[in-house]
Length: 501
Image (cartoon, one colour):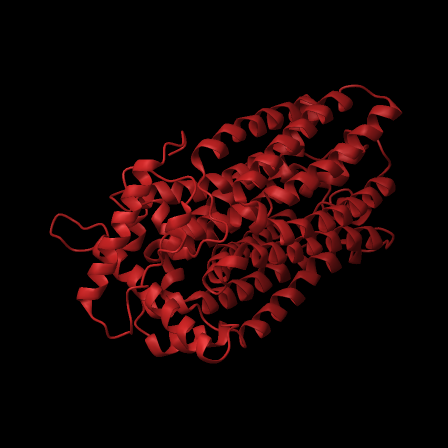
């Protein structure tokens, strides 16, 4: 929507939200029309929270894409604000379902050593879409007909249809299959996903299958129970702590998404042309062009985490991003507070730099952490709550931005600077490192009296299920493995005195 808001055909069709020079539209209504999409995404995330684990990862994503196509059709055919709003809500509903499910599916079908890299590739493709949208908007800005905004709105349907076709040939999550008692299918999927060969493949397959099964059994034994001793649902479990720290882990995932949005990224993503025009003082055509180049720089920046996210780790990259974004917002506030050509150039550079810092440290990681931190029994609803957090705070930012820029101008960037400064101690003291850890090893971080910020080296070799010689070794061996692992974890927690524990 960013490049459409100031287009001649769009403002002619929807004069109620025309905030360009000479327009009498409402900035608050414009913010609502754009941001209402996030409310749809929020409800899509909540739908996944309640029903996603029942449908499975593949079916949920295909449903999301179908709903998205319906909403995109409504938007494309809009001739008035009410229809446009309904279309954006429905489109958001489909996208919310997808964003709550894809990271979970992704984390459950990738290997520990390249899980971060795989998600970074996924998010780089996402930013390629953002970049493409900017250039499609710019190219069609020269078309003097309703196609100027209807074609960009319609194009998104092609990607949704393509996604459905791809998923028809992709496997279901082996962890979801095992959780639902479909052991043979889970083994078959693990076999498909393995990159080992020969005898090593068989050994690794048995080890991984038993690792997942034992982790699931232990979590089921330790799950929260009601007063009658019956296990509570995964949804209720998200809001209870117990020795497995479910609520703690859910809140860490929600917090990462909270930080991703309140850093101010969608201030730029949704309103880059508006900022270039109204804050920096450039022409409409130049603003669209610069937004397009900003999209290109954003895309190339998003490629960097592919090579470093698993090497450097999640924590260091998040700290790097928060510090850089804080500096960019501070300089942006100072340079847009005065009207000079030189300061306008510096402000434009800060918009580019902000995207760089965000792409490196906060683009992929907040989508990864909710699925990594949450144990298998609550992984789907926990990821849905993380996605819901993302969308509700995106709504907040997108809703207030037009009014904020119009009312207080450069001061808008000051409060985003403060937010980023506050994120630094939050990340440093409270967020455990998960790079190169299997989902089952991550559980060890949260077992014991204190939360470990980093997993000690000797626990990296203590894989759940390693004491299981075969799938039929029985309960006694499982309990023996569990006791040994828990003893190791307790020792590690006693030795760990990190202030963030």
